[in-house]
Image (tube, rainbow, N blue to C red):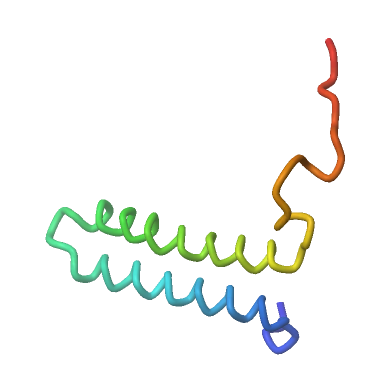
Length: 81
């Protein structure tokens, strides 16, 4: 991956991912003895969800149909067995 070729939104996501990684790393280093994995998992859950929310926000903002309320753009029937 060539980082210089990232779009603005891709750069934002990359920056959020790095910040999340740094937060997890710091939380793990500051954890009490025997609590490293639990603290790391908690940090991943919190910071990871922030990154996913940002990804969702940016991707939906580019797709006007995703922002509309109501039914899906095209109905799909479930396959019968």
